[in-house]
Length: 85
Image 1 (cartoon, rainbow, N blue to C red):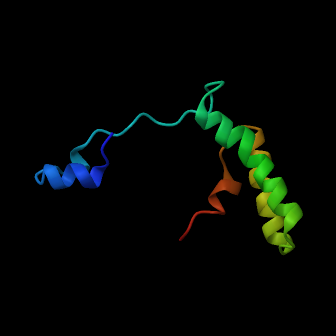
Image 2 (spheres, helix red, strand yellow):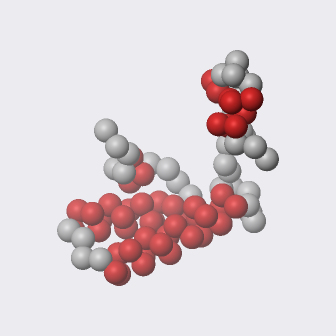
């Protein structure tokens, strides 16, 4: 499978904004890569990060909120805390 940069070299008129978007990643699909990565693996990674580092209380609270949010398959305020301005 060729990458986008290769495709743009061999087809200079190709515009990335005209390419179709891939389907969204769905964590609701049991056994999917997205579910294994987000719902199963990320909470473990967050626990490990918290146990290996001495973060200030506000960062610990935000990471714990995010971990709990992921575990309960919801999307809300904790996830928005990590967005860059």
